Length: 230
Image 1 (cartoon, one colour):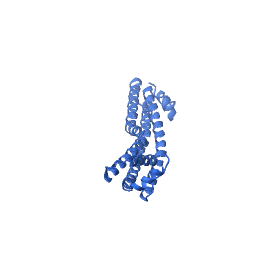
Image 2 (tube, rainbow, N blue to C red):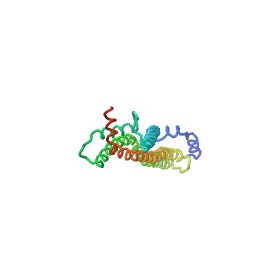
Image 3 (cartoon, helix red, strand yellow):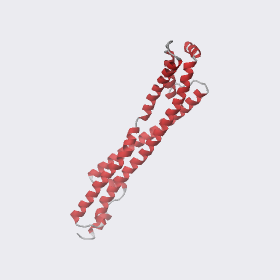
Image 4 (tube, rainbow, N blue to C red):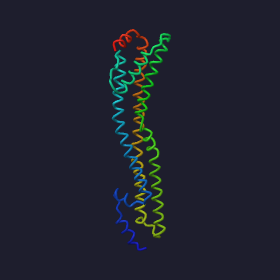
């Protein structure tokens, strides 16, 4: 092979991101497309969770603060409203034979059940982030291995070991790895942050539920008047 041919071929190879994608092997290109789609879905989930968990965190703080000061949350929507609605429904369904401890446990159990449903809704999408964070680097690595195999095939066919021959294939392969890392790193960081935030939200609500359950189980006459007024 003419030594001037390989450098010329390498010089004509487009090493931009778009060029590396368009000139990649079909298998490597498929890996890149899969990773880009995973990145789009991951960022959609991240943005949605940032908004919803921030709202849930504000509700949890307001709920815990109001309950601790002796008030009754009166939100018309959101987690607080559903938790309080569950508490009021459980409180109205009283059994005269049950003890105060049993009544408190029943009311708190109803509130915790309502909270659990909302927490499960907030967790939707987190498994995808976890899967993307763990699988994306290996998917990118598969594209890298395939691209390097193509580079060695080029060496065998051309009988030329110069960098100009293998550079395009290696560049495409490393680009697949880079995309995998771009998908994985934000997904892992977001998953860890959201998991921690949700745990804090749940803890704040659980603390308020304990206080509110104790109050509802103790002060029967006050809430009886409230229920009658409704």
